[in-house]
Image 1 (cartoon, helix red, strand yellow):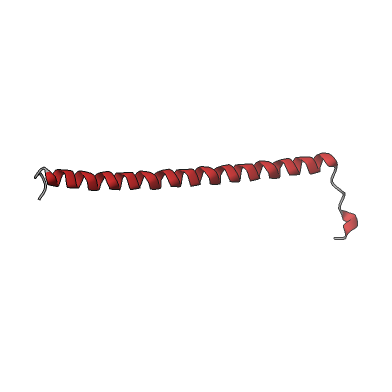
Image 2 (cartoon, rainbow, N blue to C red):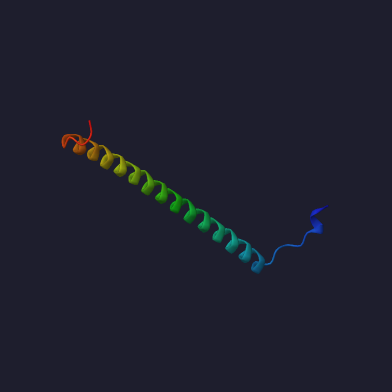
Length: 67
């Protein structure tokens, strides 16, 4: 195929393509942010559960309920 076989895009077509690309970029960015926030929340939750578990273990041990 040669270049003469293609017709140039209209401004409306270019605008539509640009809009779709922008929408996809925003969707990807939003998805990535939500994943990062979710990962951060889960990591902090696991850390808190670990600290509470260790504290509970030592508290129960001090009460003589665990040897």
